[in-house]
Length: 331
Image 1 (cartoon, one colour):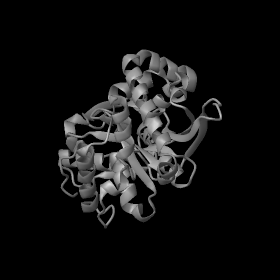
Image 2: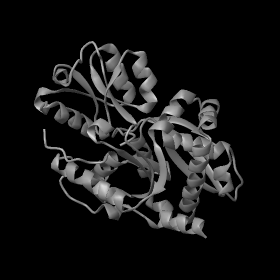
Image 3: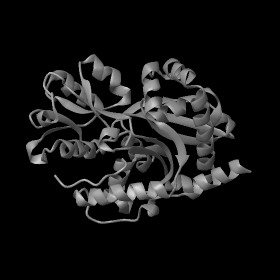
Image 4: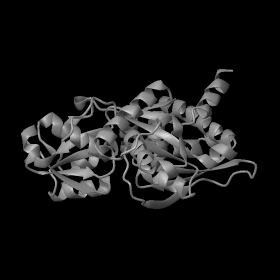
């Protein structure tokens, strides 16, 4: 196992397979409203914000007709942008760096804002009957959602436990739901699960073994937009981020109502929404710390052999969208 650097890494996670959930919501708006096709990760913080934006009128107040489509993972929202099905989606730090690094010649997207950061969204759970101490992790299967931040997290676990990758038993799966399945069935005895899956983990008898903060890990989530949207309708992207700013403020003041709204309007259990909100710090920025953070992940990914050629992360950012929003709000 290659030596890991101490990185701030997260949330939310992403599998490099296309798996459309085919579920969309949004009322018909005035023809004068600017349309945005938004891809969200089902049950994630971005999904919750989209529900609030629709139901509390924040999108409409900003002249937006937002058509929301849910996806099984965050990276799927980027797949939808690339294939022309969505205009804006989300990406997490690790998945974003690896997607850009492996497809940079044809990666027609730009990061326009960070919207969340977390050091508690993911928890490493174990079967307590099998895993008594860290050394036991080398004896049993560990669920590993391939192509996601969890590859890095599992490397951090193994390094912390003093177990080499050759001695480990990583079991590659394609989603958190599949990970829960092999943990429940006994094929795996440990694995990272999100705040959204915390109640299910406890239900099947798993217990928390490591937190992100135990290993010095954090994760950031970012909104990304298509080059086409930014070229032809940048003002629409700006209105979207302006609406998100208002939504985040409202959620911060009304967490219980947010949880109830997500459950009543889109079937997201209130307890799950509360856990997601607790595990995420909702913000709106894209500063030098984000650039440094992404460059650190990029350096690790190159060392790990995820891709061969370096690239400038700033070539895949458009800071002007958020800068215009923040400038307007200061007036």
